[in-house]
Length: 82
Image (cartoon, rainbow, N blue to C red; front, side, top):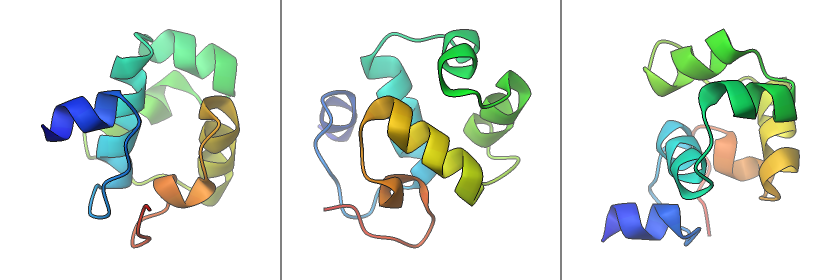
């Protein structure tokens, strides 16, 4: 159920920014390269975020939120999505 909700853009108040990003990528059937080109976030950064090696910086959160058309809070750790 959680993956269905992620893929279809339903908010989950405890979802991590990484999981939200992964769900949006999957829902839109994007590759990391496609997302990088469209959002101006380096592909290596996207990969490291998805692998849990780094968090999402504020500047990258802005870019991702603008690209996906979602509130920036969805990509900032510690914030509730609602």
